[in-house]
Amino acid sequence: MSRTRVHNFAISLDGFGSGEPQSLEAPFGHAGQRLHEWMFATRYWGPDGGEGVDDAFARRFADGFGAEIMGANKFGPPGWQDDPQWRGWWGEDPPFHTPTYVLTHRPRPSMEMEGGTTFHFLEASPVEALEVARAAAGDLDVRIGGGATVVRDFLAAGLVDLMHVVQVPIVLGRGVRLWDGLEGLESDYAVEAVSSPSGVTHLTFTRRPAS
Image: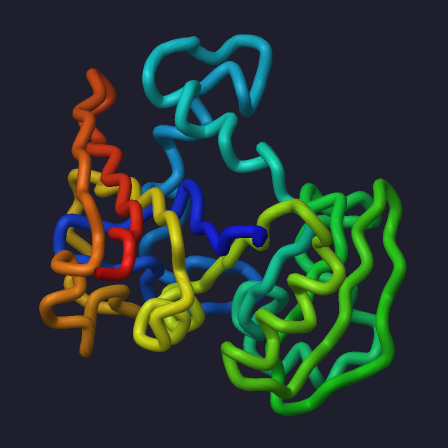
């Protein structure tokens, strides 16, 4: 069976996956791009980047996925549902290259983009959305793309098999926190930590086999 995975999900030292307020001009709120500067400095992101540990982890983002699930706030800024012309942040060739399922209380018709990405809009629970995404992914894995609320919901439902979290050495103080309500989560996973010269720490959570 395909696995459910999270990759390259960056959080601050105090656990926030984004700042606030989110807007068209500031997709990550007051966090700006600080949560992702580690990735922008990699060869995966651009030819002038480095090839160290950050690059090795970043490249796993595209490895072995057949579908993605994301939340409404990852697809667009507040109010995008009222704009029938909104097609996501990424232009006509988004970086997903798979069927991509956007969880929203206001579904709209699917949008076929360039490069193999098709956005589908679902009003569904994590279990229901994962069932649909797995059917589309076939033997490949399903990526839970974020934001923090969606990742947290899938973790709370016990649906994430492998998670890569990047702890970035900044303090945001406010925003959307990943870990709220997940007390004791670590007991369900084998956790490994790898520190990088960039200052970030790569945390890998691998679900323990059921006893």
